[in-house]
Image (cartoon, rainbow, N blue to C red):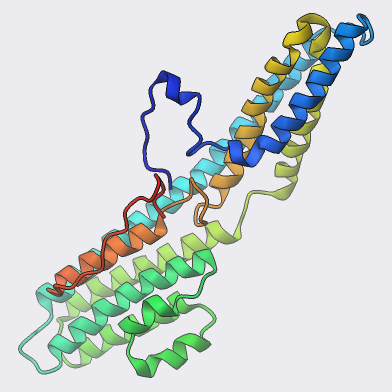
Length: 308
């Protein structure tokens, strides 16, 4: 994720961080060369390209803007829903830890160890969810928070976060049988685990259900056709200025298209994706502090303006 910048007016035109120029510069280069070639031919041989009215290009540009705007709104909705789900996960994890710390009977022999293990499982779930959404290996982050006898079960599980939630449920059931928690608190903690299950399912839905391919294909094709046809329609009226105008229009349309693709998958490692690593570490630190752990992992800070 890009750390918020507030560039002044001049710097705004030269800022690359957070922009999509890196993704679309090949298309812009092609449009520049094509429009320059068309403008040069028209300048050397006036009348080589017939004079067209710009009305069809204006109408097509309006329609394309509507399509791109709708697609960007849909992509942003996915990005924002993903952020809301991780915000809910932070609420659930902190609330569950608070309930465990505040109400679990610490006078009984099994109390302190059970409290620690339940909070550790919560931390492991957060890391496991992040790794599943990014298709990376979670074991380096979660092994130290899970009892060794559960490692084999987790490695054989098809869905590691879901397996961790089951272990958390068993721990709550153990607390009920050992009378470490009252019936009311057991129900309240189970509701928190259920809410975390909802976060897991919602994130899986966002990850596994992209926008319809046919719609994305239509927008891609229309954008390319429009930008490649544009120099031929404008050269008779704009002349040598045609390359500049075409590149600006192409930057707008190709940029919106590339940005919507990036926001469509909010759990990745692209510049504008969610900083799942930083959010996971924030939850981890918060829960370890609840256990009065003094040696905390360092916070993840931005590197070169990026927060991962």
